[in-house]
Image (cartoon, rainbow, N blue to C red):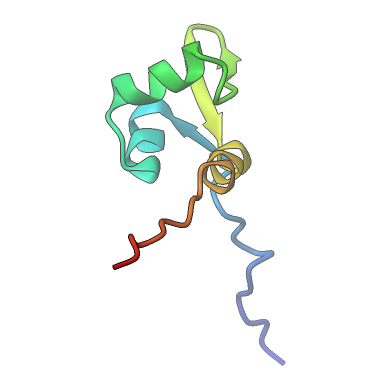
Length: 73
């Protein structure tokens, strides 16, 4: 029986460079840098390169979700 591809065969990308992290979050690269500098988004360093873990981006998104209420009237 032929083996079919599943999620475990091709895991989702874990680390994103700052440019791709900016795209993922809908921000500019400088906006991502500001999140890192302010401590809101952890960074993974490899030499001089910086990467953002997709799990940390998801956690950032979840922490910043809000429900807007409409004004009565």
